[in-house]
Length: 163
Length: 163
View 1 (cartoon, rainbow over the protein chains, first blue to last red):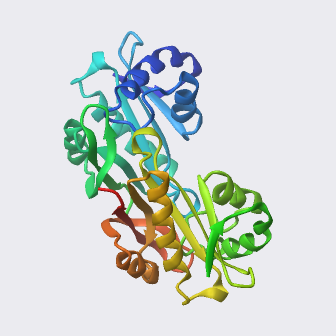
View 2: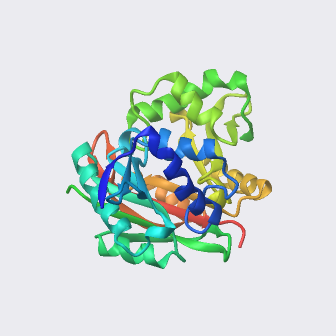
């Protein structure tokens, strides 16, 4: 697995991967009816940097973005989003992207990383972020409307990467 | 004190009030070098609704905005920002605006209210939000760069307004 910067020609592979996650409405808050244009804006245009994880043959296995979580006086804390292709689950892609993103964050000058809305039903993700050094700051009661489970709690998770 | 919807002719009074808070760099993350145009965009254009608190003679004492804190599946939780004019401190303006905003939130259909970055040094605000029923979800280590104190903690606060 290689992790490299996103380039425009990757979109045809990235969009189906993130579309599946957004349409499911279980892990990301974006409307399940989101358009391709809106998705491209929030995943590619707005973030500071975007990366893809690829297999040896060049197939894209996952993608992540990194951006400041707040403006100005909160901009030393970054936020990332990670999505792994359904075909590439259980191969360490999310773990690899998260570790990669922490190095990028350090290189770019961020001091911490924050996840604002980790859905409580997304147990695999929570376990992984904890393993990678993130702490649970707290739990937001019923802050996420899961398509399958209705209103569920969401966690704020955080890791200082430069102390 | 009356609290009413913001109208365009209020800007000449609202801008100096929020400018002072932003320039100080102690409570809001926006750059202390923010332009009037940028400030107008984030306080007036982006939010769903904006209100002002006025004295009997019409003088503006404070202002607040309300908007969804997340898109789509997180959009039932709102976020508000409140700023009181320096000349109007200690008169219950913040308290009045926060109570008003909770009623607006209910009326508009929000189910909870979240403050993402309550600066830990802003003790008066923390005390007030607690008094008004907000709970501290957790503390983000060094998530805010205070102009006077450097990196300081910030709190995530939350209140369910419809259960």
